[in-house]
Amino acid sequence: MSTTVEKGHPKGLYLLFFTEMWERFSYYGMRAILILYLTKKLFEGGLAMDPQEATLLYGYFTGLVYFTPLIGGWLADKYLGKRLSITIGGITMMLGQFTLFALTNMTGLYLGLFLLIIGNGFFKPNISTLVGGLYKDGDSRRDSAFSIFYMGINLGALIAPFVIGYFTDNLFMTENADGTIAYGYRYGFLASGVGMLFGQIIFNTLGQKYLGDLGKKPIASKKDAATENVEVVASINPETGEMLSNDQEKQRITVIFILFAFAVFFWAGFEQAGSSLSLYTDKFINRTVGGFEIPTSWFQSVNPIFIVTLAPLFAIFWNSKLGKRLSTPVKMGVGMVILGLGFLFMLGAVGERSANGSIEDETNKAALMWLIMTYLLHTIGELCLSPVGLSVVTKLAPPKLASILMAVWMLSSSVANFIGGYLASVVETLGAGQIFTFIAIFVMICGLLLISLNKFIGKMMHGVK
Image (cartoon, rainbow, N blue to C red; front, side, top):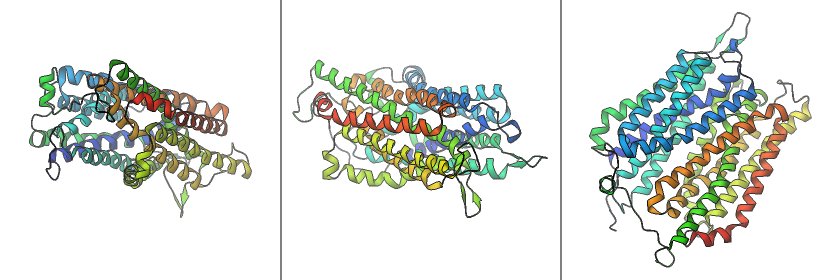
């Protein structure tokens, strides 16, 4: 396999960068205000749902968002092609956001969320594969291209909560006749829809110029796959250079499912950021800094800020002598332990409020630093688990099953969001302290268990580190 030594990246990469950035702006902008929109009272601009019911709905929604790409990816490969699927998905998601803006009732809510789920299924699995299709087999620029693309994802996720939060809590916030506040959540959905529109205008007006025919046709055969620059790698043991037997390939696949099971519990805890943590922040965290009250939705930007800051440091560490010695199970296990430690800081917030008075009193606020430290540790845990997991699946999966096993890996987020929605729903019943304690202890035990299985799993990986 030859290695390309071209410098720079094709302009198509930056087209996909901005298309994905605007899609993530749309999604994370909506996600930042969704739980607040569901639970705020009608006169406050919300739908007055019970928090338990709202967090369950949030979990179902985010779970289905990660499930439908299985179907969307299959339809793109079999019938539609990636480019058309991205356009269908983008327009459908835009209509979903506009529906949430136009119909501020339960009908509008369910119709809008349905369109977002369907649209994401067409969009999400196809734009990332277009990035890989820009480069021929063996092109050394491919890894850095995905790093650039990943920055687009986090840039959109970083910007969105600030913009949407300003719209909902400042620009379109109004005062009712009785002096109460009505938030402009519907205008947050409008801004999210406009962001999606920007992305689709960029993608469809510049696509032919910078992407050519890439992704226009479905991949119905190996011949078609070759024209898409799809890289095929033989299943070999990198330590011995020998082809793997069927039993050895089955063991590698088994490892993917073992790691999948642990990843489910990690993401179930991590995704509390958009539900139970967001509700707790809104009610019980002192968000006032220098006389300015920080909109709750802005805290959804803390994680991407930390990712943008810390990801380069992790990339350097993983390539160091120490980093190379750490196996995948150890890295992922450490990530789970760190996630659990993050929840201990939320217990610090609960403890501070308990010491200062009634925990039911919403005027009794905990210090902001507890929340920031939670997000910091959760981000460190994410950087130990998420990119490492994606990488190891591509190494372990047999070529003929690579796509379906990657889709299975992504399903861990779907299952996790269903579980996470349930966990968030019982916060109101059992209390934040009990739930945060349970999550912290459980994920740390899971992390330590995964680390203890390192040698056993390592043998089943047959040369993959």
